[in-house]
Image 1 (spheres, rainbow, N blue to C red):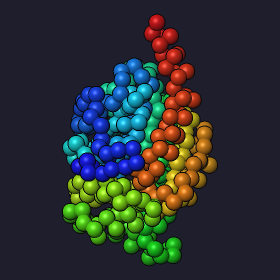
Image 2: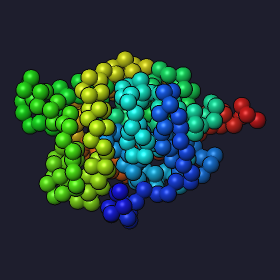
Image 3: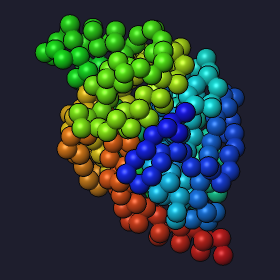
Image 4: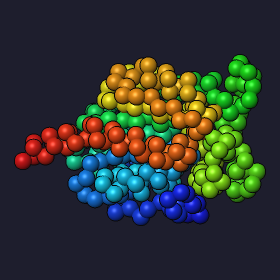
Amino acid sequence: MTRLMHVKHGPYAPPVPARELTALSADGARLHVEVHGPDGAPAVVLVHGWTCSTAFWAAQLRDLAADHRVIAYDQRGHGRSPASETCGVDALADDLEAVLAATLAPGEKAVLAGHSMGGMTLMAASARPGFREHTAAALLCSTGSSRLVAESLVVPMRPGRARTWLTRKVLGSRAPLGPVTPIARRILKYGTMGAGSAPDMVEACARIVHACPTRVRYAWSHVLDSLDLDHGVRELTVPTAVVVGTCDRLTPPVHARALAAALPDCVGLTELPGIGHMSPVEAPELVTKRIRELSAAHLTSTQGELEEAGA
């Protein structure tokens, strides 16, 4: 659905995975999982955000799969993962644990990168045994742990009850998004991307977001509205980097700075000038570079220890 986009390094098309599988979550929810790159390579797990899909990570999948085993999955109800009656932070954590168990060997560790609701997934799972068994380091990208509606800048009004009420109505709308039209692109760009975003990037993000079923978008909007994962941030004890665009209206930099201050082992806060909420698409090289840095710093030794233990 995003195969019409072109970017600096060639056609934007999510690469064909080396293999695909279905992971079963704790409540029986089926999750579409893709594995890219060579077997035995250091592992990276990519977790997309609200209304997106694995296609959102196309640039990272293409780059990292050259020398990493890259695992991406569709959150329940998104992409090729069927919708479920259950929506909530516990379901997000259950799903991530299921994917890690289905794709990583016992004791094998990976770098986990989560964008927006994907970052919230990492926070929700941070105290889970499966998360701690398999996570060497983490990247929280364009995300927040609480007060999402109150801090949002999508509605251009002064902070207060009126802005919070209107933001809640906008983000929690039941209205179908319909086809991707010029007006739809302008709205999406305003709300989720920086002013300098190229038209092909806007087109790709619009096609991904518009493909999300209305009832799924609506159901998860209520989860995000009441989200409070501040406790999950404090449990995220692995080395964790934070990335945010300075023009992010959905999860503005105030969230990233709060995360960096609260994380037990923050290894850097990167603010990307002029970039909006869709940072992995808007600034793919910079986001991929941060993932690579985490892999180089935290995966080589853990993978070596795993191999020695199995020898």
